[in-house]
Image (cartoon, rainbow, N blue to C red; front, side, top):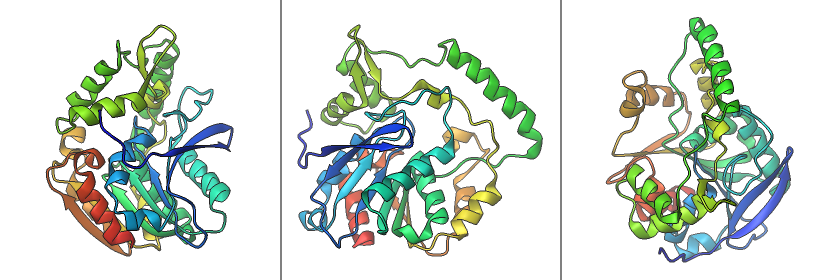
Length: 304
């Protein structure tokens, strides 16, 4: 089993009708800039542990570091809903910062879905962000107005499937099965790290079956179209320096089959006023698992 170098403490924060779970490393020190970490879709705050362990002692001692479990993930409360709305993530983040760091600027890092959230948030609240890091947060393929009827119909159909239980996540017999699932998804994930993550990515239920700590309603599509023009307007409003980190094993071509490419994403990034880009070798989408030391070094250089 992976041996944690820097154990986290749990904070519980009531936010917008949810009891939020937040992991905290280090000791809050007045006058320092907090580092806030936002995980991706079907992930949890504990996913950042390997990267936090890889930070230098000097870096960790300079600031508090927190990672939140988004609503319906990890140990954060699951609201009574049959679908989730992207703006709620921005509102939850805004409320969290107002609660923990009122009137203070922060450094903000987001991975995948969390990367999309932090880019939008930084364009909406530019005064709150000192520096911003987007890890593989590519956004979505462009949509056309003509897709609206079928998109809405798909949402309604998926709500029916959710009510019928068709979206339920697969259970596992034990934590070993969860770890095997994690390693199947990410061929670079070692057995010791997978075993540790499994304990935080899933938990046993009353029947003894292990279930992923993610609400199946997250699988329901958003009924509204993704409008690139709106995303670019937010990108243009980002005041902070931005570091975009990509994995050498490119994912977009597999996900979207040519509908949305890395070149499309790079074109969108031209709207970001102050941009740096970096690529991590020997890494896939879960680069905080694959190359935590290299990623920690990148972030330290950018954030210090």
